[in-house]
Each structure stands twice: as structure tokens, then as C-alpha cells.
Length: 305
Ligand code: GLU
Image (tube, rainbow, N blue to C red; front, top):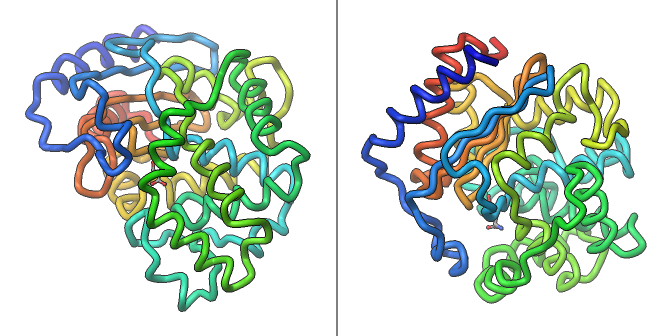
């Protein structure tokens, strides 16, 4: 940990000072209220060591990072049949695009673009008795944060302006790949995206995707080895919208970003690291977050390649 710690401290100080050409997401009005200067990092290692710096203990809107948790639960419940409803190919298109759905007959390219995450939300509704409550309980158990909650403000804000997601959900339903009512699916999807966590909470929570671990923070197995491999593979190939290739190229880790400016990245043998800086580059990924992780895997020589 000492090596990681020193390298993180050095890169943090360097990246903090660079000019940030990104912009805070404002298409969900509530997200635009964040202080753009926030910058936090936290790493958790297989030895269960933790190190954080900057705003690593400040809660923020994790947005699409939570799609990793909804996908995990849907995969547990639905098994391999899940891939009949949603594919595992990088889309090469923006996260909220409608473009490919027509040609693909309503089967989203992957579970991390909005179309795919909406289908995953629909799968969860079909399985869970009380979807909102049961999913929250799964998140609470996986993270070991008993008071983890949805942000009604963020969910409401997105509901009021989420026109593209409304279009996506209706469009997919027209192909028969949404089984429940559109309003219910969207309400659940917006709530999934509204969860707030800190970098420290994120890097601890997603340790279930690191080999030798595979467990919730309370010790229960989340996914088996093969399933964990598949989730990491989808994160590597699809976790950064149409910049997934770039992330793999520059950073070389499995990961998932969110439009709140957070990124989680997994080294399946060694650690989970979470970074947060709200200003996003043109593809919707945290500008400083990407910079930090590129330097981190370069200096530690600890990418998966
Ligand atoms: N709730 C956001 C949306 O649907 C999630 C986007 C993201 O973080 O990628 O637009």
C-alpha cells in the first residue's frame, strides 16, 4: 500500500492543478449544483487496505456506476437468459443514443448504455416483489451501508427532463423488449441512477469484482468466478460509453463511469479504485478522473495488461 499511497498523493497534486477543460453535466438540473472543484480518490486493496485523498468522503451522485449493481443483481436472478434481452457489444455510440435500436430490433448493444440499463431495470421489476425496496436492500448489503438511499431530488430532477430515456423506453417496448409499464420502468431506472456514495464507499463496495474476494462487505458471495469475469469484461469493453476503447487504451482496467463525474476501476487481482471529479469531457467521462487513472496505472505499472 505504501507504494500506491505515495503515487496517488503525487498524481493527485499534479492532476489537481491541471486545467480542466470538462463541463459539469447539466441535462439533469440537480447535477449542475455540485461544486466542480471536488476531487477525490480512494483505493481498496485485496489486503483490505484503504487509502483516500481529497474529497474521498463526500457523497456524490454515482449515476451510471450504479448500473454495475443493477446488472449484477439482474444477472444473479436471470442467469444466462439475460443476454437474450441485452447484448454485450460496445456500442461506439453516445450513452443515450437511439440510433442502433431500430436496426437491432430493440435489443440494446450492452447493459451500460441507457437503453441496456433500462432493459435491466425491466428485468429486475419482473423478478422482484418490491423492486425499489429490494434493489436498495441488495445495494445496502453489498456495500454494507445500512442507510444507503435513493436521492428523491436527483430522481425527480431526471424524471422532469429525461426525454431521451422516455423515448428509449417506449421505443424498446414497441419491439416487445420491455415487459412492464413504461412509467414504472423509468421511475425505477431514475431511482437506480440517483444513489449517492463517496469514493471510499465505492471502492469498498466494488471489491466483489476483485478475485479472492467476490464478496459483499458483509462476507456473502455476490457472483461466482465466471460471472465476475463476465461483468469485468463488459466493464472493460463498454463501461465508458463511446470512449471505452480509449479508457482501455489509456488506463487498462475494467471500469464504469457516471455523469456525476465518478469512475470506479477494477484490477481483478489487486484493487478497486474510485475517483471523482465532476467536470466531464465531451464523451461524458470525468476529465480529471481519466487523467488520474492513466497516470496511476502508468506509474504503478498495475494495469491488467
Ligand atoms: N441517469 C443518467 C441518464 O440516464 C445516467 C447517465 C450516465 O451516468 O451515464 O442519462
